[in-house]
Image 1 (cartoon, rainbow, N blue to C red):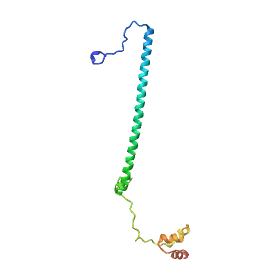
Image 2 (cartoon, rainbow, N blue to C red):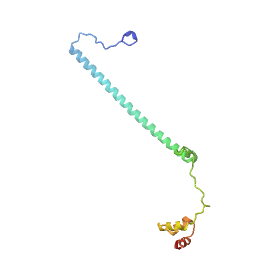
Image 3 (cartoon, rainbow, N blue to C red):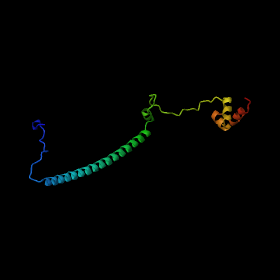
Image 4 (cartoon, rainbow, N blue to C red):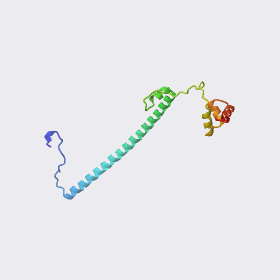
Length: 147
């Protein structure tokens, strides 16, 4: 490369001195030691900077985590429809909030065969009475019927 191309002139040329080869060797050794010292100082500074950066990043991550938890807590106390709309569903359906249905007017079909099968599997008469909405006496009467 030529100097006219805008590059800085190289300083890699040896300056001629009248120093002996031993003197030049000691100068090179001193220069190596100086460079090694500078490198170790720079490395220590770099390690300290990385440690400080990692600590700052950890603090920032923890703070962001706490803010996210606070936002989630506030959202949970807010509109249940908003939470349901954000929830991912494989069907793509959105904004479905589970509601407790009013089942007071529902009637259960009292099927004697089904009741006998459940009793055979170990259901108690009081449990069957509660499930079918009838009295325990009625359940026992159905179970005692030939069928």
